[in-house]
Image (cartoon, rainbow, N blue to C red; front, side):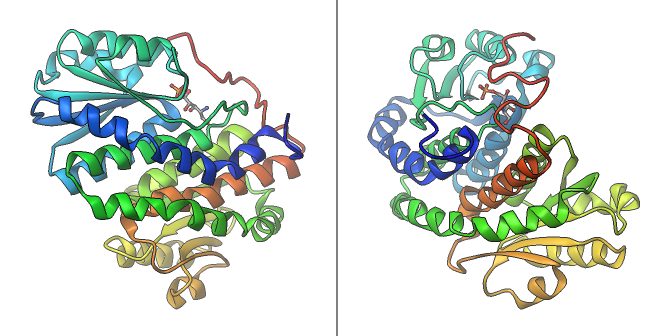
Length: 347
Ligand code: M6R
């Protein structure tokens, strides 16, 4: 059942290139759905947990590619914004299970006021029956409590949707290259396992990134918390100096997500700030980034040609592996973290 892997989570991490490939087949259904759309004036994403992080990537994408004002609301907070729902908005619900109670409650509120779209991995789930439009993520069943391949498939759907809405054929072609790039990233597993051994006894971690890398930082921190029980804080890199810099010292590893592109130089200066306070930095960046490599104690290198816009699909993978290997090295079963359920059916 685990296909030779010691845990479902590791199997599911390695299934991600295939998950992307399968999800890319959704493109024709997505084109059909998009052709039925009325004109939307804004987009609102609603989700919880990892699905919320996928939604944040959606915000940068929809604002950047379509110029549509886009907000992202936690499903558990949605009722407090009910009066502000724009009837001309597309409200997009992202949920692996399609059964998360907070998400369903928000979907029922939104259905009364605007068009709703559910991006869901489970066929026939409640969200698929109640939303106006449905897109399937086609990740296949995910058994591990930590969302991995479903996150990657959610991101793939969001990229497909944005590309179809703005008829960006070039982006659709770029997406086809992701499965092979992801295999190359997965081949770095031994390095990341060794890195896990160096950091497994830390009590606190920071994960920082800007723009497209901010949701990756949040997701890396969430994976760490849920399966290693180490405190991990995901932060927009530019916010560090507004408070949390006071917590940084040589006991706190900082994972910095620094792909080449618009956010690069400013995140790099944040790396220098935390280093000056003694932090050990794990840098995620291009193979062609000598400054980041010289600042980082450990470095995960990605092919230079990956554009910042697509980096969320690849840069999260080493963070999943890091959390997984720290979990195993701390004697925890990553498939069954304490206090957590795969599907949260209570508000
Ligand atoms: O099924 P959903 O996507 O609606 O679940 C939302 C969250 O409970 C879920 O993403 C959770 O945060 C992950 N299991 C974390 O890995």
